[in-house]
Amino acid sequence: MSPLPRAGFDVAPAGLVRMRLVATGLLVGMAALFLAARALVPLHPAWGFVRAFAEAGMVGGMADWFAVTALFRHPLGLPIPHTAIVPRNKIRIGDQLAQFLRENFLVTHVIARRMQRLDVAGAIARWLTDPPEGAGGRFRAGASKLVAQALDALDPQRFGGLVQAAVANRLRETEVAPVLGQLLKAAMAEGRHQPLIDAAIRWASSALADNDHLIRQLVHDKAGTILRWTGLDETVANKLIDGLSGLLADMGTDPEHPLRRRAENGLDQLAWDLRFDPAMAARVEQVKAELIANPAMQRWLEGLWEQARAGLLAIARDPERAMAGRLGDVLRQIGETLRDDRRLACAINRFVRRAAVGAATDYGDGIVRLVSETVRSWDTQTITRRLENAVGKDLQYIRVNGTLVGGMVGLVIHAVDVALG
Image (cartoon, rainbow, N blue to C red):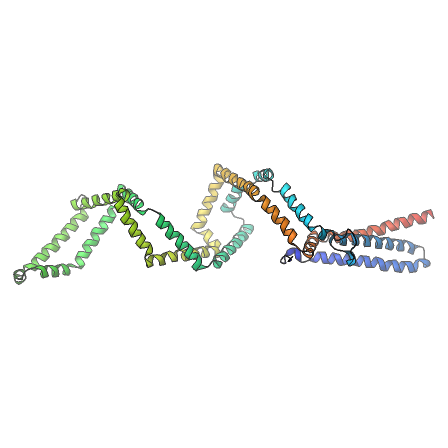
């Protein structure tokens, strides 16, 4: 089995290494003190107490070293029974840990009770309306960096193609004619079509003024020889141009002009045809299909994703600026709504609670299997190193305490022995 990638628990903490040296050094010191006291006992009886203290401390330290080491490996590499407890039971440890999670954390009523006390909507409202300087800033910075990296990692061509295809498919599936007919009807009901007619009239007047020479040339070419010889073609052209100019001027100033009324009737009929005439709907769909297939439209659709991506990147890379603009105003308004509308807040909290309970119900067994299979997949060195590092220096304190407590017990026993002797 391959070991896990290196993580925080794969490297021994500095405190653990230091305490391991202290415990080992204390044991070595007790051994040295025992040898020295044993040699000095004939010089003075007090050295007997020192020897008893060092001897018992050495025994206690050795016993606790054996006990601590036996949890994770064979002491001195010897296959002593009931040692290397953790590596030998890693499968059972994984199963028990997974079962512990299942029975104590991934239980629906436990999650529901815990979520009942959480005001998720209130927390979101407080963060949006008054984000904390420290945590909020770090959160925005971290989230913005993550979003920016994710956007940079996306393949513009591939993802842009997906966006283009999605928008194009959505346009193909949408019946445009009824929508256009409804929009035109609503615009006419509110009189918003009048500026369109006025603009058309102004455009026609401008086009007539800019192209009067074409009209004169047309009349001259169509006129007979006699009209051209007498110069009447120029008179006819002037009358025609003046008549058209006057007609357009009257249409522009008279809202009740007959031709203007006919234009409005034509727009009203167009709105009806767009909504109810199958032939008109078919023609609109054909035009829509041709527009979608047009290379220019395809290029525009391709640019949609890149434009959206550029905008999102700009927001992600400068979240404070974005929060200070219109986006920030919108988010703050959302926060105020969540803060003031208790019904909405309760609905959001209820949704979050049900989502958490549903996730535990749907994926609890999967999480349990993941924990169990992950621990099973660890090699013995990995699980030993990680558990030992997770427990930390407390095990080494056991060795230190065992050495000192053993020494004190040996000192008491020696004192009792001297008193009784």
